[in-house]
Length: 113
Length: 113
Image (cartoon, rainbow over all chains, first blue to last red; front, top):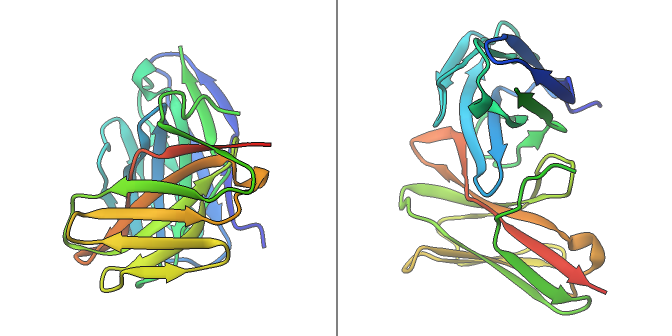
């Protein structure tokens, strides 16, 4: 199994540009999440989904949109990129219920200039 | 690897010694506490979790201790090896939001040969 796959691995955007970070999982997990990781800040939750068609905001949702049309895919859209969105982005999935083991992708390093 | 962790607290230990990584939490409503390990350039990886009604749980070379009185969580690694060098995050799962994992800011573990 591939697990959680994120694309692209690296991206440079100009301020004001939009783009979509892709995330796909092949484990049939109900829960999926997007985190951003900044130096010294740990992982902060952007958006999450508990199943196809259901999404909600996390701690830092501003400037980002998500959708969950299928169980497998959970894309993250940057509407108008800003330098403050320079970060490493991680997508994670895990099964519903009490299990706490989340599976993370390899990350997308985004730089906004 | 990414620049994550430049400002993280760092624990330096000699190879073969035991390591103790600490974490303070604030949410008494959490029902699980979890430890993740992040190697350079990779996404976090699940190590072990502990339910809130337990004080101690052991895994392979790792032990997690939970002190609810002072809201403190620790991860003990026995006979630390060079492959243990990484950033370690504690995380919480709350009873009312089982789909969310909230991460702490992390500790960098450096193993000296």
